[in-house]
Each structure stands twice: as structure tokens, then as C-alpha cells.
Image 1 (spheres, rainbow, N blue to C red):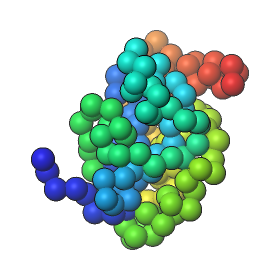
Image 2 (image 1 turned 90 degrees about the horizontal axis):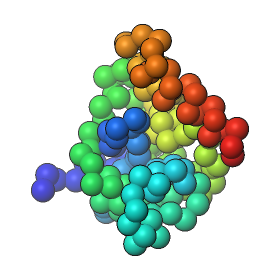
Image 3 (image 1 turned 60 degrees about the vertical axis):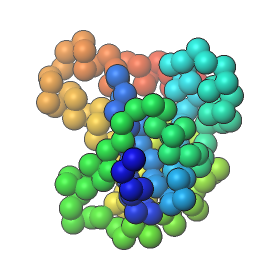
Length: 155
């Protein structure tokens, strides 16, 4: 196993249609904003019961956060080089928000949470980047625009 990242590092777990983000708090704990839709990706009831509690910023183990995926550390830092807050500041911001924020795929998701904590401003780059890099096509438009819209309407 690689050594744990420093407290306050931004963690990313690439998924099939999205990337899940969190802030490492130390002692194998990650603060992240998780919607109820993530556990729908598995049929394992034990895993669902362990992971699902609500739609707020929560703290889980690194293993539960990663959900079996590989973890990228501070991958977004290259985009925000001049805006990276100190690692301790990022961790403190994350800890202050634990349990406090409702989830919105469009306006308040896990990417907004980590960019606020690590860079000082909530930003969503991943969905928009797929449109700019890959063009406005069904493969990019559907996951980036329509799925969040319909989930927002359903919520």
C-alpha cells in the first residue's frame, strides 16, 4: 500500500460517467459529499447500508470513499496552481462543513465541495470540460446536461 496522502489533499476517484471527489482528513478518513445515487451502482445491500446515510457532506474511510476505484491525489492542483490553499486550511474547511450541505448535481456537488475547500471557490470543471474537449455530442451532452437536469427535477 502507498503511504496515506497528507491531511487536506484532494482525492479523486474516476468512475464510468463521473469522478467522485473528497478531502483527506488524516487517519484514513475522507470528507465527501455523496448523493443517494452512488449506491445504486451496486446490488450489495451490506455495502449500501454501510455507505448510505443521507445526502450531506460526510466522513468515511478511504476504502468506503474509493468504493474499489483507484485514487488520484491533488490531480486538479495543476489547474489551480496559484489558488491552492494550505492543506490544513482545506481540511479545516471540510471538517466545518461535515453534515451541513444538501446535494445538488448541478449547483452543489462533491466537486464544488472540494474546490471550495482546497482552492477557496466552488467550481465544477469535469462536466464542462467533457463538452469542451469532446464536443457537444450525445456521449458528452447526456451525462453532463440531461442526467443532472432530470435528477434535479426528480429531487
